[in-house]
Amino acid sequence: MPTTQHAADYDERVISAAREVFAQQGFAAPVSEIAELAGVGVASIYRRYPNKRRLAEQVRIAAMSRVVAEAESARETEPDDPWAAFVRFMRGCLRAHAGIGVVLPPYEESADVSEDFTRLRQRMIELIEELVSTAQRAGQLRDELRSADVFLLFKHLNPPLATDEERRAELRQRYLELLLPGLRERADRLPGDAPEWDELFRMCVPGGQ
Amino acid sequence: MPTTQHAADYDERVISAAREVFAQQGFAAPVSEIAELAGVGVASIYRRYPNKRRLAEQVRIAAMSRVVAEAESARETEPDDPWAAFVRFMRGCLRAHAGIGVVLPPYEESADVSEDFTRLRQRMIELIEELVSTAQRAGQLRDELRSADVFLLFKHLNPPLATDEERRAELRQRYLELLLPGLRERADRLPGDAPEWDELFRMCVPGGQ
DNA sequence: GCCGTGCGGAATGACTCGTTCCGGTGAGGA
DNA sequence: TCCTCACCGGAACGAGTCATTCCGCACGGC
Image 1 (spheres, rainbow over the protein chains, first blue to last red):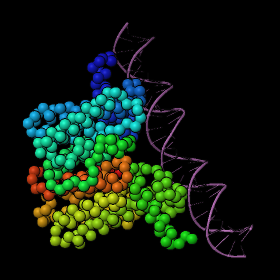
Image 2: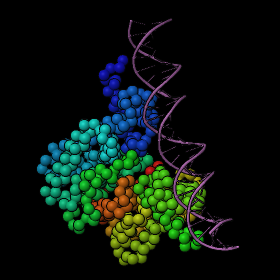
Image 3: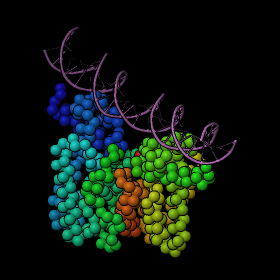
Image 4: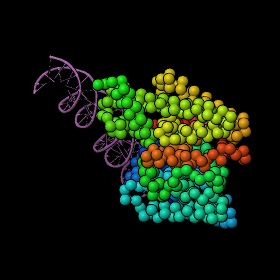
């Protein structure tokens, strides 16, 4: 009875458990924890993914796809209001189970990252850049903000906290709302240089969240 | 030649190295890394501190003292402007080498925490509470904000980033400035329940940053 | 009732890290 | 100049953790 349907459910269950565990504990979390949450044995995970690295890659691909979809949907839903599109994108990414916590360590030291992964990441970057610059051209978003700032803000809104995803999402939204007025503001110069994408990538290396 | 002076310098060097390493990598960082940064051998650390836990406690006591001093100084420097005092406190805590990153995992699961530690933590909480409620009574700080929010915001402003402390401090200040307008704002209700101190403590358990 | 597939969880081996042990070194006194 | 000794850095050790693999079992199909 390994129907295609069955296999798909199975995959979904594992990926989703891995997303939650990695988001809460970072990529250093043991595979056994993922297995337990998914309600399967460890061996079953290894039967489908050759190793932990590949599993993590799949999880990140899934989460980045979600971010990309969020960006496209925000752009389409609010074609005439760049600020609204930007806000919708931010809120969408921070929603519970969106998995933003898991896309955040963006850098892979080793060269053995799949093509898909790299391509998707590039697309994500471009979409964020577009949302930011569109809102800035409309004078609705602080000029000193760079697209990498947005990404880094996602990371800031995602500290490792030992609670369930619902509560973490609630807190993310809470602090996002505190942030929004400052993002519109056009006042004082922001201290510190904006991060560049490659600095950001270098900074986010460690296994942790 | 173990002059008192020499011993004090030595202590200072170790504690300060430990602060930097713990702040960057979390308390799970190996002791050997601290030794290397301090330019001493591991054994020398163990000659002064019975074990890693006690070393970490000393580091956290030093950093919390700094936070307490920051709060008192802010209150005294700006006795008539609660908002200014609050902002000064925030900026002071986030400054480079203030060690805020290291006070953040506030909870110790085991009961074997020194009296000093507990007392100091209590004092820190009271001072933050005072800064917050004073500013709120003056109508200068958002009412829905609880003192534990402030602490949690410190954590949010301190993600684990693999750069030197100077750059991390620069980014902390950058994002603090984005946050400030939202903290004054009196507008929309903030989503999500404010954290209580004990929820906060429970959440921050894991070894990580 | 027998066979084969697929599963969960125990077993394994590599590795990391806290803590301890040991040989070296350099200052001060004879 | 040589000896002594206090102190130091780094290697060594043992425990614990985790990725990955192996094994016996349970259950559907014949």
